[in-house]
Amino acid sequence: MSQWRESWAGLSWAIRVSWVVVVAMATVGTVAMGLQLGGGEVAFRVATWTYLVVPIGSGVLLVAAARRRPGPGLAAWTLIGIGVACWGIGELIWQYYSVVLQQDVPYPGWADIFYVGAYPIIFAGVLLLPHMQARRWERARLSLDALAGTVALAAIVWTFYLQDALYLDPEAGFLENTINLAYPAGDLILLVALMILATRRSQLQFDGRLLLLSVGMLVTAIADMAYVFQVEADIYVDGGRLDAMWLVGYGLFAVTALLVAGPPRVREQADRPGRLWPMIAPYTAIAILFALTLGEFGGQATTLQIATAAVGLLIIARQGVAIRETREVVEKQRNDLVASISHELRTPLTAMAGFTEILDDQPDLDPAEKAELISIVNSQTRYLTRIVGDLVEVARDKLDRTTLTYATIDADSLVQSAIGMLTNGASTSRITTHVQPGLTVTGDADRLRQVLVNYLTNAGRYGNGIVEVHARTTTKGQTVIEVHDNGPGIPKKHEITIWDRFERGAHTYLSKVQGSGLGLAIARQLIIAHGGHTGHHPSPQLGGACFWLTLPNTSPIIEVTSVAAAVA
Image (cartoon, rainbow, N blue to C red; front, side, top):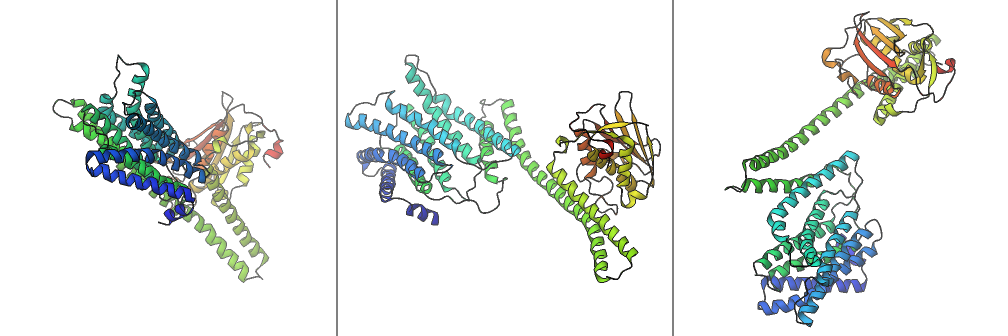
């Protein structure tokens, strides 16, 4: 209620009076015509006066309310108000001919032009309503949902309304046939606008404006379609219950204007992109379409139609199950990631905390022991820094498009510098190198060294103490660097998955062997960025695993540095 009070308090005296008059007349007219109070003559008189005021008054109120709240929604609500006002002008022209001149309303005439022109104007306003920016795939999903619901809605409306309402009179002129087609097409436009409103995302907690607007549009569309059927059956009566339905729609537009004039309530809680209603709304229309197809028995539906409808219903059910399954998979992956990273961080943090506590409690510690403790702390700090750096780089997910500083690098110096950066168990392995004399590679020295350090670290961790590095050129001029170990190798079932992020193959997060499962994913992206390839196979020399990389014989030289600087 506070939103209603705030909206009311912001209105001028003239708008308040106008709003009360319009809403009161809409209420009186709806009750009088809906209940047929006083008989048909009284209902006709009530309809005459209420239709002179309520439709155009609702449109003017919407425009005035939009002007009081300049912002992203100004153009949208102004267009919607103009569209409703066009219906009101059409009603005025209709009443002028039928009441003042007491003659048949020309068809087609100015009244029809204003009636029909309102539909695209309101639709344009709905399209311009501000909405939250969605991610690329989320935007694509919402668009497909809206399109699917629109197609289903169009099929339903065509079957039960449009195919009977759309007609061309061969004896009529172009304008008359255009109007004949425009009226039912306008109702379809309103229904499509409703589907757009149902699937859009908003920053508002509960947007009563859009709810009232949607209900008003739905009531108007239903009344329009009912009018066609009543005219064909020759049972339409001026001032009847059908006119009361239109008046309800106009009244709802007037109530909407009150909320438009007030301050909208922006969402304070976290946005939830996976809301239930935008998913249900379009597929409800699809389910209705399938149900109607299944209900067309007695020769009205073929076996293929029934089978198609049944399969469609099963697909909808399958989508619900798939969404649930995906959520469970994502939840499990998140839990595994948290557990893995927690395990990785706990070990170095525990060591660092213990050693720094010793340094703090024993200031007179032997210099040699102090230097050893500081060296261990520094080593664990570098390890933590590498893990955090890996997380940041993978989160960006753009390593294959990273900017590289190319240089001509001596291959032996590159390999030796990578070996010199090894720490912990990897540095204790017996590493021998077999580098082709005079071999050079073209690439980013820091990034290539990062890849080799990862391969050498893995060889030291998972091997049995012997590592060999081979570097040579192929017959095609490509540079090949291989890292062999004498460990158990890569199990067959993990040959593909080890290149995925946070995947450690047979070494799960419960393993005592350190690792975040990010190194190989980063290495592959960096080699791809160089235009090369990487992979693994069983080592023919040592019987363990062999991780290899190939680099093209030519690369764009963005920045050339000296060999010493490249491997420093």
